[in-house]
Image (cartoon, rainbow, N blue to C red; front, side, top):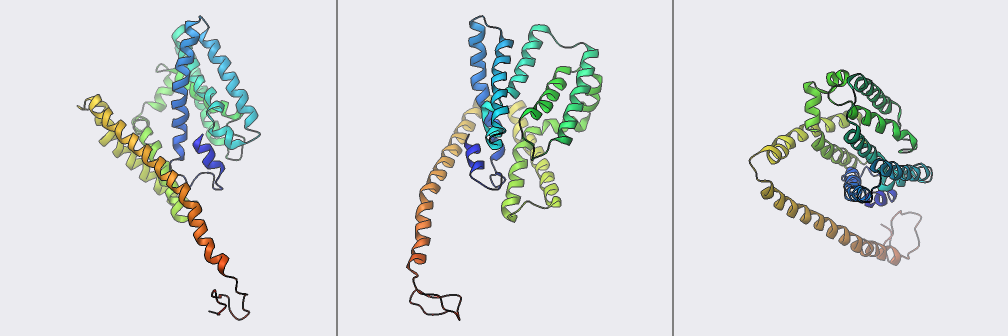
Length: 289
């Protein structure tokens, strides 16, 4: 909700915020906090988990369809309008748990249909459209079908199991973390959307940084000799410090802004001398510059 508020208060669509891309992680974490508890309560009370998923997803979709035509920014950033997308994955997990995976022919059809939906979504969805809205169902359904296809789908294996696709998958998370700050700083430095060549260069730099992040940080922590507890405690402390520092800076900026504005306004208010025809600049006592 913080990013929703910040984007709504700016005219650049949030591109000047280098951390804007973290909103999706915030939505995910809120979902992971709320949904397991809701599913556990439904299970304890003997309720159908899949029906519970469908009911909550329906409510979330209704909010999405209503709010997207009132305020697209609100519909895009609020968790309640995006939970149905995550619940699609929850529904798939529950169906596979209770009914098993797809047969090979069905998996091949699911993979083809899912990839087609994803390609069409990338090609046809535009910034000016009401998104998420109903059109968000296409990429969500496409992703669900590709995941449901599993490893038995030949067509999917040919596309996603080659070395290039696997390499992109390995660095996908750090690539997500790096790409937006670089593009945002490009906008901030140039005071406008960077040229196409600059954007390509920034994306190339983000790929390099993502690969280095994976090899130097992620891989040693996940698969190296470090004890998980030895890494988790300092990491939690660093994250807490960064969060507290960010909050402090934000609070200081909010308190300092009115004082700065007031100081700028004092000389303007005191300058009561009438303008001179022969000069564009006048001192406080009326002398021309």
